[in-house]
Length: 358
Ligand code: SIN
Image (cartoon, rainbow, N blue to C red):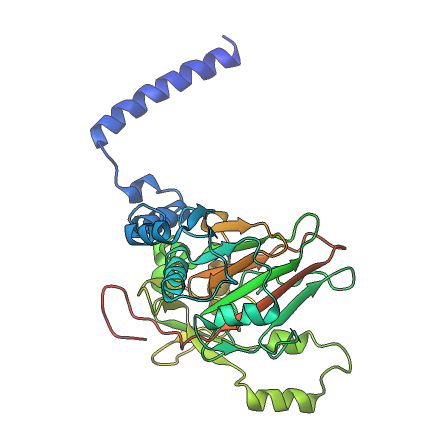
């Protein structure tokens, strides 16, 4: 018999065995279905929490009433909202609708908006106070951060992160608009921090419950060019903006009560993990190993959606629900984004089934 004769015979034998086993086991539990790897389970559990539908019925009804249409990019995150003009005067129903869409879908997008700086700032302000950004290129409006890359400045936002975790009260959300798009590439990817948390291997999940990490903006200080920032200026910045703040690795979303994995590979001190209550530190090697594993877990493609920019596109992401990553794959072309960040609150962790705040 040839190889193919054997292969076909074996496939038929195995298939018959599988049929018999499946009959016996009737329906296997979801945990058993995902035995090999929990990543798909993380997405499935998050989608189940969403009622196995991309948005709630209430939100779908609001969209219909307001003439908006959803184009979903991922199962649990990322939606382009069509039919809403962000230049139009703000109304309470639209703002409420967009806020709810952000909470449910974690990152939302708009096309062809072409807001000027003040209009973009005014749009962001509908959702809270704003935080100016001290370490980047400001726009004409001081709340605008210009993110410009070209043949002298390759993209640098190509690490998974959530914005400004070095702040004691990191940003609620960011509103970015693309004003110049490269001919190809330059997409931004977003990853669901709730699904990533649900998909963690059980032992790792238990290990990080009650752990916190120190975050700082050392990465900006390290990136300074010669002569740009004197030691005296660095000291003066550190005196004005706390350098080294503590946040839990598991973060409760203050609006939905859901638990997210909260980590930033660039700002976190990888050897800083410690017990949130006692302050007792893990040994440096263990701490680094856990951080490395969490970063790998959060970056798994199953948790992500990907947004292709056009000029005038807007992305509005919830920094408490997603991480993002700007693909640096368009050099030597120019890519320009304008970003505004909305003020947030102090991260905390309260186990979902009840229990004390950590
Ligand atoms: C950012 O990291 O905030 C900017 C995202 C991007 O450049 O796409």
